[in-house]
Image 1 (cartoon, helix red, strand yellow):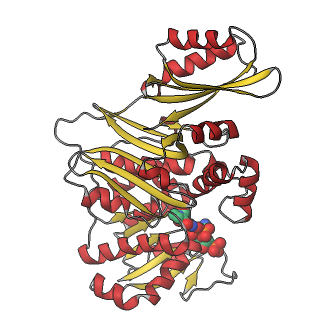
Image 2 (cartoon, protein in one colour):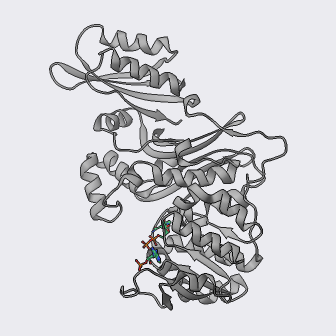
Image 3 (tube, protein in one colour):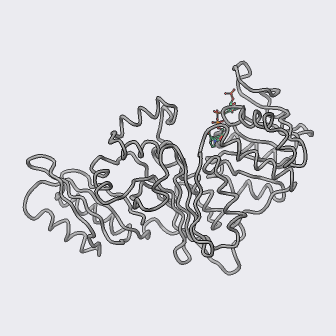
Length: 419
Ligand SMILES: NC(=O)c1ccc[n+]([C@@H]2O[C@H](COP(=O)([O-])OP(=O)(O)OC[C@H]3O[C@@H](n4cnc5c(N)ncnc54)[C@H](OP(=O)(O)O)[C@@H]3O)[C@@H](O)[C@H]2O)c1
């Protein structure tokens, strides 16, 4: 089987090299030899550590009848979308690791693909075979929830902030120097990369056709050392969590920093590693852990898809793409999300302030679970509290009212609690 690799960068070069290094075992498992026949790059003069014929002419590869599988590893959204469409229309199987493209175009491409294989294991949590687990291993179950730590940059930063007390700006700079964060880190720290992966899982598990703008996405930029002190005091860890959860006939899809009890397995996923917990109605909780990025780890998942195509010849429908008979499952509105909340208020140290905050919360049925007050200086202090389960829109409204009432001296902060 001959493959064309569109994009021979970090992941593309690893795909070509692993196909060479592990040729014997891959050939035995695939039932045929998988030949990296040609790679497409934008700059032919760049020096690279890979043995593959290169071209900068993508059309030549798409129209080459001897190529069976197109492996898209160039990144971006609209350009790879056009390339994959054309490849599928030319009858070629396609494998991609491109979560940004899939966050917007997965349904159109799946439809164009029809019976032709269109696979994307590496797009979610890099080397962890989570799509395979959902689509095949857990296929007898209703999926009750998926909770993932799927952005290594954020997890590295939060781990350092919690374990070593490093502040956000310092750790961001360090992550950039180590190559974990981009010069413009918004895509990672703003939660968008994790959201793209969540949307893919939301389709596979529940058939939800949502775009990034339809779901709740919050990043880690506003986490302060007071929040970390609170987390430490009450035995929570703070993680950027991607959550897909079935509540009745509705599906919550959300990405945000979360306080997670340190007793939970997922709270122990530290550093750049990724972890995903999936709860099925029959199997209970299952947990997946591994490298979410890196050339070889990601290429491992890309090649698994290629081998699968070699074995079966065609694609398989995604779990959730065809909804079970009679099930009318829809995306839950962001306003209706129900969870516990941690709230932080900066206040002047004077009588009546706490009572006013408690009253405004109480008027919206928000009850306080735990509370501590931390002096900041002679005149100001922080009130840090957690609530019992409350409704998102009530919390948002209460925070707005508290801010407008002049009870606080800075914008209140909020982190959702997942326990
Ligand atoms: N890196 C990871 O750990 C990781 C993990 C999971 C998923 N992914 C996904 O995998 C994909 C590839 O990531 P990567 O890190 O390997 O990217 P990368 O190192 O930047 O490589 C991109 C490759 O695509 C080529 N390319 C870009 N635009 C092109 C164009 N218009 N025409 C022809 N070639 C073009 C580049 O050519 P030149 O070499 O000439 O510049 C380069 O070879 C992305 O969708 C990414 O989200 C990556």
